[in-house]
Amino acid sequence: MKKFKLGIVGATGAVGQEILKLLEKREFPASEIKLLASSRSAGTEVEALGGVHKIEETTPESFSDLDVAIFSAGSDNSVKFAHEAVKRDCVVIDNSSAFRMDTSVPLVVPEINAGDLEKHQGIIANPNCSSAIALMAIYPLHKRFGLKKFFASTYQAVSGAGAMGPISLDQEVTEMVTGAPVPNAMPSVFPHPIAFNLIPHVDQFREDGYTKEELKMRNEARKILSLPNLKVSCTCVRVPVYRAHSISINAEFSDPVNLPDAKKVLSSFNGLDFVEKVGENVYPMPIYTSEKENCQVGRLRVDHASDNGLAFWVTGDQLWKGAALNAIQIAEEMIRRNCLRKIF
Ligand code: A2P
Image (cartoon, rainbow, N blue to C red; front, side, top):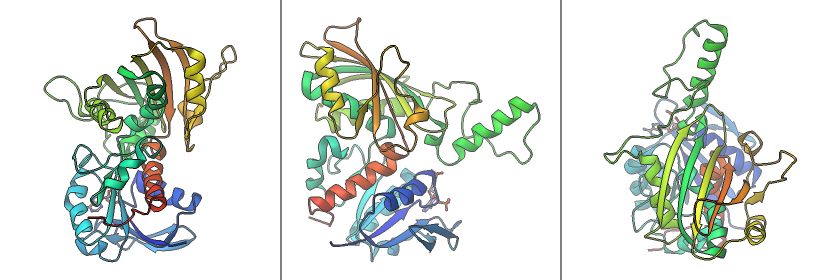
């Protein structure tokens, strides 16, 4: 089997570290792995994939000898380096929001729209974490009943804010429980205390009162499902959970819905587990979805507030299906389709 030279931009970050774990777990066919980050970490040694690797500073030349690079270093660095990589014949799978709505860039959840990969022009975008997890449950229902619109409320874990998110939660919990300030505490990455609190604010506010994160749910759902007029309203909330996002969804469909068919399509969808035992307290929860490749869906009900509506609850590891895993699945799918190369 052909092996690929792979770069990871942001290898020291929260998502970068998960990429390293998953590459090993999934036995990704890499002949060489290059770990890239900022000049701050250049020279640091990292143990991964059975060897010791030196972190290198990211420069345009970093990509000259690579087949593919997975970027998880924020939008600014994607804008700065992705085209440099493509110029050097290195395909980019980008975890940031920089290119997601660019019409020449496929935005892909492999279980849903893998075919879009074949149209790539060097850059492929990985969806926002909450969008990817929500769509893993919405898509099979859409295929069966025809989606008209949905309302979503997210419950987003602190690790979604980067490596500093869990550190902020730890510091605040320690201070609140012991009553003593943590020595050398780092400034929190959140605008308010997150310990024992909920913050209905993820990403920046727009003029219409929604946050950018909330608009990602609408815009990315439209693109991934190829439903350009889909109506979506979303509220994003940061919660004091370490890992795995949860999303409460109320969706309305064109066709009459029924629970047996809904359960059937959700249970048989690749990458999704239907987790529900009414009367036995069995339903998806973030604590049991952490470090799981599959998302989980449950609490399935007929929505009493709409015609042909279903209410359900989805959880998924946002560092995995919402970022690292989905990016690796994109690369694996491109290998299967023989399009992990510049094709323009
Ligand atoms: P570094 O550790 O050198 O700062 P997180 O989202 O968890 O905060 O991680 C962000 C990632 O993006 C880190 O790996 C970080 O590397 C990387 N990064 C930050 N700035 C740059 C840059 N200018 N070039 C390449 N990688 C960067």
